Amino acid sequence: MTATPLSIKSRQQEGVLELLWSHGTYRLPFRFLRGRCPCACCVNEVTGVRMVDVEDVPLAVAPTNIQFSGNYAIKISWNDRHDTGLFTWEYLELLCKDLATAAAS
Image (tube, rainbow, N blue to C red; front, side):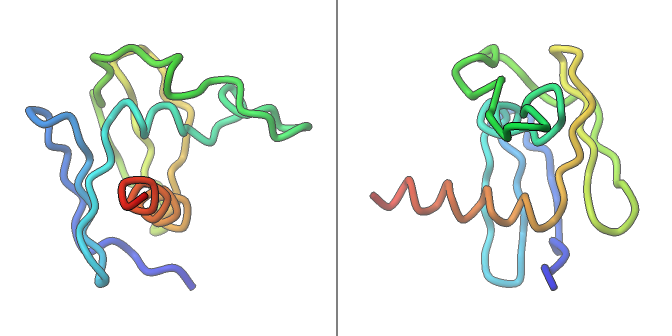
């Protein structure tokens, strides 16, 4: 079972979502996070092909609202008017690890 983040903070000035997990703190840039939205508008439900990627997202994208969806995810509303993605704890943890791996290489 995936752990729940201990803390979630939107750092508007820095343009990152900061997630504190029991194994460390990770900072996901807003543009990266928006470009990895898992919703059906951004990822084809049949083929799994990503239709919106980081490069397609405006540089100044930022959350306008972040709310919990049950005890398993957050829903982010963005200033580009997109708001259909649910970011589960499991998916957020995967994004944190992917970004950390990319930064290390």
